[in-house]
Amino acid sequence: MGVLSNVKGFGFLAGLCYYIYVVLTRIVTSFSEVNQMLPEKTLEKIGVLYGVESVGVIVEKLEGLLGRYGDLRKPGGEQFLSEKDIFLITYADSLRRRGSSPLQCLNSFVGDYLKELVSIVHLLPCFPYSSDDGFSVIDYRAINPECGSWSDVAALAENVDLCFDLVLNHVSAGSDYFKGFLAGDPKYQDFFIALDPGTDTSSVLRPRTSELLHRFETAAGEKWCWTTFSADQLDFNFSNPEVLLEVLDILLLYVSRGGRMVRLDAIAYLWKELGTSCAHLPQTHLVVQLMRDIVEMAAPGFLLLTETNVPHQDNISYFGDGSNEAQVVYNFSLPPLVLYSIVSGDASYLSRWADSIRPVSSETTFLNFTASHDGIGVRPVADILPAEEFGKLVERASENGGAVSYKNDQDGQPIPYELNINYFDALNGPGLLGDERIAIDRFMLSQSIPLALMGMPAVYIHSLLGSRNWSVGVEQTGQARSINREKLDMEQVEKQLNDPAALRAKIFSRYDHLLKLRCQQKAFHPLAEQKIHFLDERCFAVQRSDIQSGSSILALHNVYPEKLILELDGDQLCGFEVNNLVDLISGRKFFPQKKHCCRVELGPFEFVWLGAE
Image (cartoon, rainbow, N blue to C red; front, side, top):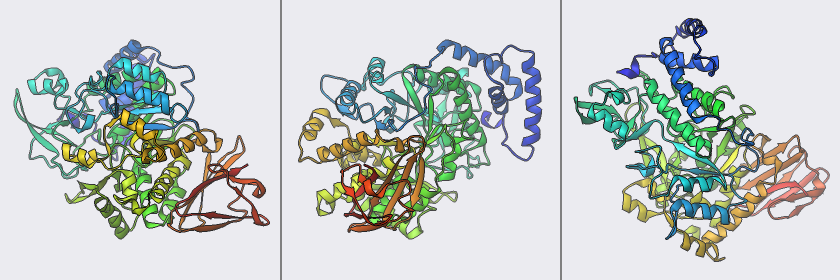
C-alpha cells in the first residue's frame, strides 16, 4: 500500500533520520535551481514526507503551481483579525428566493441586514456533491448550479471576506478521481487507499460507527477502500505527493476567488499509517505546515482554520508552534460547556476550562461558537464533566426533540459523539419552558459568552435568525444533522423579521445590538488579555482588557434561573473606576455601595458587559 511506503512514523530514530535528511537535502538542492523560490523549511518538510529523492520533482511542480496563480495578496490582507471581525457560518443555499440564485439571495441578505454585523462569511461546501449536504464533493472547482455561479461568489466577495470549505480528507465516490481509480486510470491508482479486507485496522480512531473499509468493483477486480466517514466518501492517499499537489492547487484557486480563509475539514484524519490511531499524526501536521508555507508565499495573511472536533489539547496542537500551522482553531469544548452551564445553573466547569485557555501567539486565535451546521460535539467535554453530568447532557438532546450520534471507541463500543439538535431547542425544549421571554434570555445569554471570550466569535445563520428544530427535514432526509440545516424562504424570513412579535425578530434585534456593540470595543480584540473571575458558581465572569487602548470590559453571565447578587471588590474591579461603571448593553449604571466595592444585581439568565461610562 502506497500510504505505508514513504514515512514509517516518527520513532526513536527520528532525530538521526531527520539529521541525515537535512544534510542530504542541502547537498541535493545546492546543485539545483529548484530551491530559488521555496524556502529551506519547506524543502525539509517535503523531504520528510516524501523522501529526499522526490524533493526536486515536487518542488518543480510546486513552483509551476505558484507561478500559475501569481501574486494573490490583497490590499491590507496581511493584517490579522480585529474586534471588528465576526464570522457567519452558512450554507450557500440556507436562504432561497424565487427569481434569484441562493448565493444572490445570501448576498442580498448580507447587504441588507448584516452590513455592520459580520465581516467574514463561511460558505459551507457549495460545490457539486453526492451526499452529506455537500461534504461528499464531486468537483472542487465548480459551484453547484443549484446554488449559483462563481460570478455570484465574486459578487458576495465584494461585500464581505469569504471562508471556503476545503474537504480535503475525502472525496465523493462520484468524483472523476474515484471514477478514474475504478476504471484503472494509472493517474489515479495511488490517489486512494486499498487494503486486504483482512487487514488489522483495530488501532484506527473511528469518528463513526460505520465500517472503515468498503468494497468496490474496479477494472482490476474487487478492492476494499478506506472510508473514514461513509461508503460515498473515499479517503485520499496523501502519501502520494500528487494528491497534495492537487489539494494545493484547489486551495490557491479558493484564494484567487476571494477567500480570506479556508476551513480544513476533518484534517485530523488526513494521514494514514497502520498500527497507529491515524489521527493527529506528525505527518498530518507537516501537511498543514506545508499549506501554511504555500499560502504565505502567494497571499500573506491568508488564514487556515482547522476543524478538529476532539479534546482540547489535540485541538490546539494545530496551532503548531504558534507561527507555522493554523492561525485559527475552533473552541470545540465551548458549545457543550455553555449548554451544560445554563441547563444546570452551574458555570463552574465552564469557568475552570476558560481559565485554562491561554493565548498561543500573536498570530493565532480561537473561533468561539455555540452552533454550526454540525451538531453539538460532546467528546471534548467527556473528560471535563463528571460521567453522570455528561450523561444528563446527552439525554437532554432526546428530551428536547433531537437525537444523539455515536462513534466507536478503541474497543469498538459506541459512545456519544454529537448532539443533533438546534441550539435554541437544546437550551429550552419544545415548550420554551412556558415562557418565551425567559427562553430568549437563556438563548441570548448563551450567545454572549462566545462574543466575550478571547478569540473571534462565529455565529450560525440559524442562531442569528432564531430557527428551531427542523424535524420535518430529518424525516425527509433520514439524517439526524438535518435538524439544524433548514432551507429558509427569504420572503417568509423577511416577513418575520419585520414582525416585532415574531421569535425571529426578537432574537435578531438583540443579536443586531450585541454584534454592533462588540465591534466597537477594543477590549474584544482577539488578542486582548483575558481573565476569568470566580465570583459564584452561578456566574460566568470574564474580563477582557486591551493594554494599548486602556479599555476593559467585565462580562457577567447569570446562568441561574433566579436573581443573583454580586459584590464586586477591588480585585474584580481591577482597571475600573467604581464611580462610572455602566452596562454597555443596556446603559444601566452601577454605583458603589462602599469604598472600592460595587453591588451588581442580575436577574434570571441576565448578562451585562460592564465598562467605563
